[in-house]
Length: 229
Image (cartoon, rainbow, N blue to C red; front, side, top):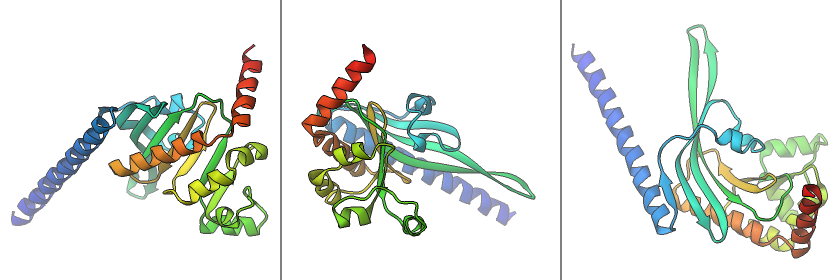
């Protein structure tokens, strides 16, 4: 009987602690949002993977939804920050086991049309695949090429976006996985952000977009006009 009571007490204590952690996080994110004139909404949104089909981080697993959403304007860019949940499954002789994954991301909307581009910190496996001949895009800066893995179907676009000033900026900034689609750029890590990390991610994306060269802005605007005419 004592063991049962202890087990029940442990479960109750865990649930109370989990509730405290979740509530504390919501309050901190809400306060940060208010301090930046942004709107905070803790409710779930299930359609984000459909709104951003080219961001592969939002297409993983099943049971996908965003929550703790922060939205508004960030220095002239449309801003969306959020926590994200998805599920994966493993199978044993006892049946299916569900694994819940959570991470955070920030998306900025660009008024300049973009092209696909992916930037993330380089890892050990990248060194192995590079040795086997599966290269990412290399840059003049040896330090940048050593620290970042960059992929794009258009190398010229990658070089246009990641010029010397942008390389220096990224080397001096907190690192995130970054991806571009046609009108947006996302920064994320496979973990939940603190409020300060939401801000850091937004500043990195803003810095990338602010540093787009003028000739790139003109060329992209011209191409957008040509396709829409």
